[in-house]
Image (cartoon, rainbow, N blue to C red; front, side, top):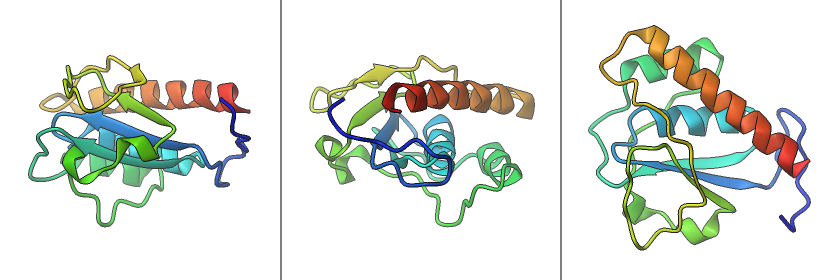
Length: 137
């Protein structure tokens, strides 16, 4: 990376992340919220957005003190992936030839599972975000 990113929790780092999946209802939404809470600039989108964000995903973010107001699934068609430093697929087989995916995190979809599965997914997202922090600091 050629940019100079600050990696202090709660401070704007300047690194812009776009999290992409199919429905933009769970993993990518949690990743966006968690990334913002760690100081990244972040957004999320789906190739076929769901009608709403999963209730367990909202509850999990709120339990961590992360704001969820206004969270709604967005379409990748409304985004400009080139405006982001890194585009990360959540591992749901997103195939969109017009988008260059920089990393595929290969996360299992917790939708339809117990809340504990959401917690495990969030923990893995946090682990990967911490690795990114280490890479850019």
